[in-house]
Amino acid sequence: QVHLVESGGGLVQPGGSLRLSCVTSGFNFGGSAMNWYRQVPGKARELVAAITSTGDNTIYADSVKGRFTMSRDNAKNTVYLQMNSLKPEDTAVYYCDAPRIGRGQGTQVTVSS
Image 1 (cartoon, rainbow, N blue to C red):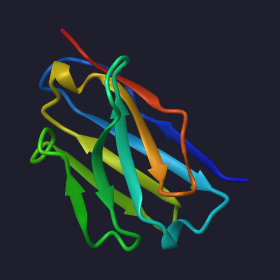
Image 2 (image 1 turned 180 degrees about the vertical axis):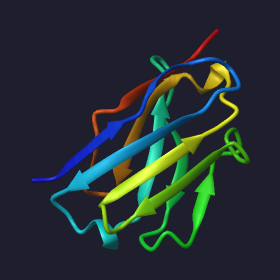
Image 3 (image 1 turned 45 degrees about the vertical axis):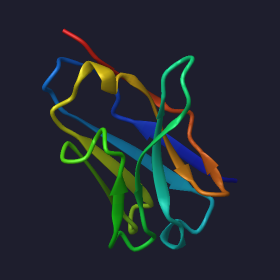
Image 4 (image 1 turned 135 degrees about the vertical axis):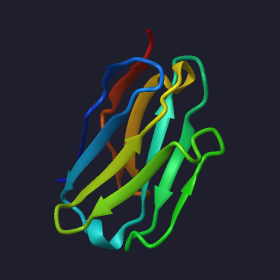
């Protein structure tokens, strides 16, 4: 059974940092690219970052370039999203996603003073 479980969200002040984690099981994690999405109620889902199966290449949405870093540990079946210099507009539910396999339940990130 496929599982993706995000953690690390919370309330943070503007300019702060959070590190999201997504622990996975039930599929060939090392053979799968991974994505982080975010969604705000009433808005379309946004692809925040993506990483290749080996972790050699990443892409980022323009809105987060230079502030967010996606990484993975294939030995731990885990993907991460380091978020720095957070802004109120980063407030959303963040999901990790394994293309064509599944996604997690999400973790809420709220950036507010």
